[in-house]
Image 1 (cartoon, rainbow, N blue to C red):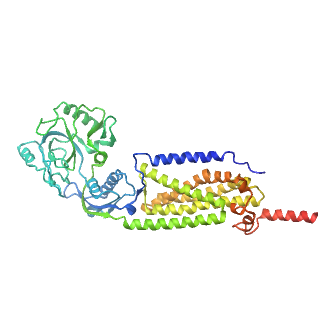
Image 2: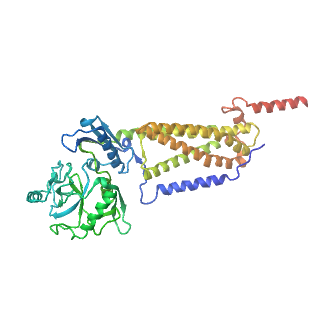
Image 3: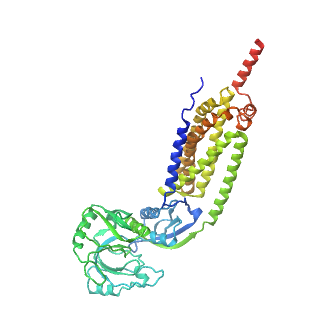
Length: 529
């Protein structure tokens, strides 16, 4: 019985068109990045080696502290919006080092982010003293914080003597004692603060996110606190919001609180009203980077050790770029040979295969671009290799389908029927082969790390796209072409000519069983007549 013909191949093509348009809009939506993120081996980046030191002098560094440090640093690095970043440890105990490798990040920003190590705390501002806007530039290690249990005369004298024009005064690097008063500078050295003991510790912060203001222009940082922090925030905001505004040389105490990291003031917002819900919003002259950096500091500020950057290396993308160029040339050469083979062997059907390959390439590119924007996918050399390998998998799908069509024609079916019945037989083979490839990619992804994981991810992704293209483009387009009267005449150019089917091809080299039976039947009829 002849198989049921495809009723609506246009429906699959239209559905695929909608998917493609959706991907195009998503990938190239105005105001967003339109490039795929590249890995450290392709675009270069920064590698920083950090030496951990105990918070308290003479204490030992444990493996648990190192693991916690790696986890927090990885969260900080991931917050930069990059993938394929690596945070690893070398050695153990007090002799260990932490290596951070991040593609695309500037050395200054990366070092500033990962070397902030102190215990984070929130302190009421007692007074804001004059600073010096014209500060000197340069690298300097932090000095010991000016602290005292009470704001006595000695403390006041030390606070007045604190020179915020000296980079050492605002370089940080030494944790402060949250139970004592603190005199310190902000992180630019432009302001000097006298701060009361902390009312909230960094461990009380449960969430911190940067966001655009809902009303107005600019960025804000939204904060969430645990129950202990929420109660402390309610008490502090109630009392501090009643105080006069903070200003240089003005009222003391005043209505601001300081976010102190590593003994240095990161930000000093004001309480305008009591905050009773356990959430708060910090406003200021933030841009996207500064708001995200402050949010990251608030989320991941409390490290169990201090970190000192001992080596900063910029990784060049030159070698990776050369390898990428060679890989692309090899891939294009291989793809060209595959296309020539398909055209030579399958003629008109080969054109469908080439269109399918081109469409699969476009969908892979758009999908990688969308994933780069949404989940931070980063393309590495290993991922490029996975995409090139998938070209062969996609070509296999066409060959399986087209050979099934030839088999059906050999069995006496018309081209229109062969396109349908051949697909019913081919899709089982196609799904089984692609399922094995995806299963292998999933297992490899789960058990591997680094570049091998990128290879497995791209291989699995492109194999899934192969299934999409085969079901929603190759098959319906072949069915439509098979209904064309020129194709049904089976000339040589169609790739389905009688000579091609009977004498060429993996199956055509030897007659099929059905052909033998048909010829045997014809011979018997001739003898009988």
